[in-house]
Amino acid sequence: MSEHEITTAGPLLTRDGRLAEVGWARRPLRDANLDQAAPGRLRRWRLKRWDYYGIWTPDLFVSATLSHLGYAALAFVYVVDLRDGTIAEQTRIHLLGRGIDLPHDSDAGAVAFDDGAIRLAFAPAPGERRVRAAAPAFDGGRGLSIDLVLATPPAHESIVVCTPLGGDRFYYNRKLNGLRGAGAVAWGTRTVAATAEHTLGQLDWGRGVWPYRSYWLWASGNGVLPDGRVFGLNLGAGFGDLSHGTENALFLDGRLHKLGAVTFAFDRQRFTRPWHLRDAAGRLDLELEVSAERVARANLGLIRSAVHQCFGRYRGVAVLDDGTRLDLDGVPGFAEEHVARW
Image (cartoon, rainbow, N blue to C red):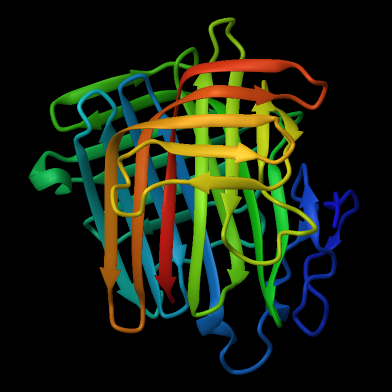
């Protein structure tokens, strides 16, 4: 079945909590009326929401996330040194989700969290997004501070999916890639001045009702090509009914180029071996050479998860909608497998 592009605005969900329209879009056209989701007493426990920011500098990848899983809220930050593979991370978990209130609109509504150990603030505004984080005890007391502004021009496209997960379960997701950024990152005694010429940001904004046992694959890349153009990559698989719309897309200077289904080939016994990503139409053939593996596990009884997120550089071929071939050599990115009970 061919994929369906959503081009009209309207509510995300019908009155019985199901998706009003299934498919993909270039912009967040649907109003996330989550008050209609999962009708009944269990609604608050079944909704999953998150705002995940990732920022690429020549030497570092830094990330800050606020998520609400119904049973608990999580705030976490991590840093990957892209030169030597060093990874540091800090997570705060609050049962019942106290302290985190995430907005329904991906373009409006600032969110802030502060429990004394981690302070996070995400503020979208016309044409930009500001991401701030502070964790004084991060990495054994070395500390972490992030203050970055990501440019989001009105013409910059994103990949948005409205994906059914069975029954009244669904996933509404928006991903932005290749956002020019500027500001500063301080990790211990090391301070990185992030300039728009070499700094790129991305956003993963998700809302939905997921099955208790969930699985997904995700790949992302952001880089400046030799000719100065900004390239972005977002791929996903392993979850829901993707026959009407995948999240697979290329981005070049903020314009989306849509891909169909993509296969992920990797070694589950040794995640650090190269990952191979290909599509059936012959428009994508990439290899991710892994230089660092982030393993994140959580076991809170009812909530369990395991993530293998592999960082490295993409090499291979990507073909745009008009047939233009891009030969990629060293685009920074990651690919991950995520298994969850939540």
